[in-house]
Every structure is written in C-alpha cells, then in structure tokens.
Image (cartoon, rainbow, N blue to C red):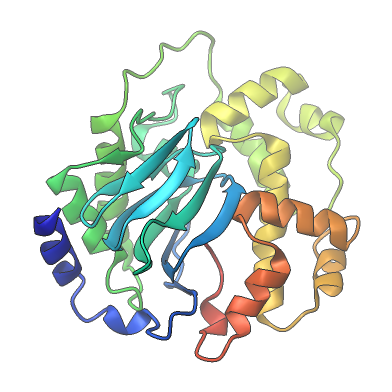
Amino acid sequence: MSAHSTQTPERFEGLERSCRKDGHPDIVSAPTYPGLERIEASFRGAFFEPHAHDTYAIGVTLDGVQTFHYRGAERFSIPGRILVLHPDEIHDGSAGTDEGLRYRMLYLAPSVVRQVLGSDTMSLPFVASPVIEDQRFLTTLVRTLGPLEAELAELQATDLLTEITLGLVRHSETLAKQSEKFSYRRAEQARDYLHENPHRNVASETLEAITGLDRFALSRHFRAAFGTSPHRYLIMRRLDQSRRLMAQGYSLAETAAATGFADQSHFTRHFKRSFGITPGKWAQVCSAPGARVSNCARK
C-alpha cells in the first residue's frame, strides 16, 4: 500500500491544485471528448448514494481509501488501484477514512468500445473484479486522466481509447459467443434517433419502424451495442442536458421542464438514481465558493 501511496500521486504531479483543501466536496471535470468524460472528485464520508451510469466508469484512487458497494459486496480501493464499473451496475461511493478521498474517473461510452472492437462482436468486455492492479493499464489511465485541464488531440484520443479498450479486454472474461445475428447498424439507428430527440416521449413503435426490429429484439441488440436500454439511454441524454442547464443557473423546476421530464419530482428521482445525489445537492456543490461551476458536468 505504501508503494502505491507514494508513487501514484506523483504521476499526477501538478494536478494537486484541482483538489480543494478546505474539506468541502469538489467535483472537477476535464474538457469533454466524444464518448469520453474525465473528472476528479474529492470528499469525506459517504457522498454518493446507490446509482448507475450508462457508461463504463474506469478510475484510479489517488488519496485515501475508496469504498463502495457493488454486486452485493463492499469493495475497497487504495492509491494505485484501478476501478472498473460496468454500464447499468448499481454502486455508491464513500471515503473509507477520516482523511477523505480523492480519485480520478473516466466515463467511457460503450459505443466507443464497440468502435474499437468492431461492430461484429456481440458482447462488450466484462471485467469480473471491480478493483484490479495492472501497471500497463494504470500508465494508460494516467496519460488519459492528467492533466485534467488539457484537451485531448484526436490522434492522442484514438490511441488512448484503443489502449483502454484493450485493457478491458485483457481483464475480461471470455466474450460470450454470439447466439444470434447481431445488427449494430440497426441499434445505431435507434441510438441516433434517441440522441436527436431527447425531449420526445419516444414510443416503441417509432423505434420499430426506424430499425425494422421488434421491441424485444431491439432491446437485446441495443444493450449489446451500448450497454444499456433504449429508455435509459434517452433518460441519460436528458440528464446530460440538465447538468449543463443547472450550471448555467437554471432552477430545478426550469431544468425539469426544459429537459422533457414530467415535473421536478420526476427529474429529481432520475437524477439521484443516475448520479447518487439529488440535483439540488449537485447544484449546491457546483455553486459553492471555490467551485468551478462550468466544470460541474459529471460525477
């Protein structure tokens, strides 16, 4: 543990300034890249309630002990360890000691993993252990997660995303054999429509007409391609927009109305389920003195 504790933060040298020193929670985001978001989070105690993302969440613990419940067990990570959480897998997040916790996390869209692997593979990589040790993988994540303020150049991003995906494959169980002819193109048609129409109450019949698949076949193909269901994908696109609006100063009621939710209660329920905190608490953290409001975009 001591080796990791002394070595890993040094690899992020120059990035300490993005962690607040006053004991208040802090969430800082990097410039986004298509299919990839990067953040640093620091807090004390229990902070994130049970929730699930529609992306892979892959990160590195920097300071403290990271604790979380995942797949029916309490998990722990220390500096230098790698976390791999799968799309739609419920987890929470806490600091395991009084000293608090600091970590960096990237959120990788399953569609990017699919692009790297090729669209003819039915299954996405599945890593059984959520906490792993892999120096090669760690080096790739350090390059991707720091410095946070830097944008990723296109060729650089392509290289890093490929290495991250291959890291997932290296630690994954054998990919399941394809049991039916898989059509990534049809799943992509549904995804594109949902992406372009996040405020609509999209009916199954609409997606059936667009893709030529019945709703149950589409659900299977969509999850195989993107790691989540069409409905959850739609909700997550609304929530993505909601965070941007709240960072601009929209009230919760205004945000709920602008992003297609039935009301503020409906919005709050989905937000908490997806990010582990209420939108009110999220807005409070982002607007606190010293917080970087424009960067409050992703847990």
